[in-house]
Length: 443
Ligand code: DSN
Image (cartoon, rainbow, N blue to C red; front, side, top):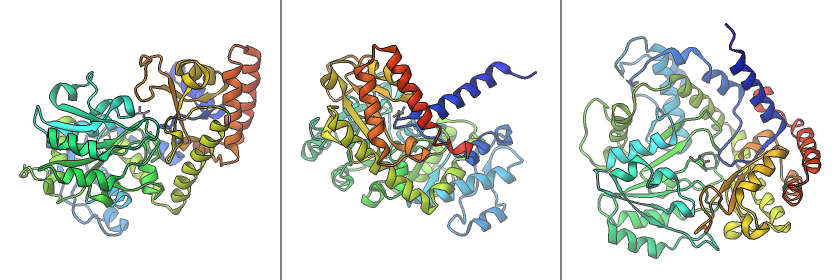
């Protein structure tokens, strides 16, 4: 029987996406091929374990031609093995990694697997203050990781966004972290990865881990530094933000790749295998092979020269939008942006909390999210800020000149938020504009 309810809702969500503009900096629009891989029969297959990791450097035609002995626990893997091997080979190439684990179901699972691979209960992680833009999975007290490990935090200067590297080094020397973690979900600047690496290397047995979920697509598009170029051991990321793939996680690492069936010595050199064993069977069961295929498709797209242009345009659009917002009285946290993301203190700009702005802009078809600002005096559900960014609208095809229009709509909606007729008029304008930029899955 046709499931009318669900398919009507999918249709309605497609229309919402077509008729509005997505400004949430962690969202994007995938291609038709990514959607098709996600919706394929690969979802029917169990593939616990791993394919062979041999011969991944060569031409893809060799990977497709070869069926090699695997490390799986179920039969029938002649296609799934090759799908996962292609995903691994492409991810390694994109990030310059020695190894890639493409199985994490999400960014949270990827981070959990790295903690589980390298830490013992009670060990210390030095990471970014959650209130300064860090992420829930970096030790928020409500998470399971925070019950197991000891998280110590460093912050930023809220005016400039700068890290105080001397203060971070002092914290590292005092707390002797086993992981120095650089990563964030609401930080509009670029860290000095070399300085972080120099600090981590002074601490014995310290793993340098970068959670690059937000900027992964900028890294592979060469519009942001790559932590591996500065001595980091591990990068975790999601695959659906700037990387523009399906919803999922990914772990890249440097080191020697061994058999996942044999427990290696716990050394930094063996981190690839420690991570493989930590993902499966340590923290996950069967991989989602349809999602892994879609990740492989997205990696294929990100390896193409056009993706460099996309990454550069995303950053250029964010810089222009920041400029246009500032002109209109929006107060930007750190004064601007160097990546795809903008954080605005709407409380000091307009005297209203971020939730009101989120709801008002929803009404006109511009989607963004309320967000805490550094040292926010307001509670998390009514924070002082909003967070927005350009990855999705850049995929739609918007360029710098379109940012003026977006800033105009944002200001008009905020100023006239109690005027329903004005909001309806703005919504009609946004819809007319958005329809000129088809979703990639409609092209
Ligand atoms: N939810 C993601 C974001 O919006 O940044 C982080 O997990």
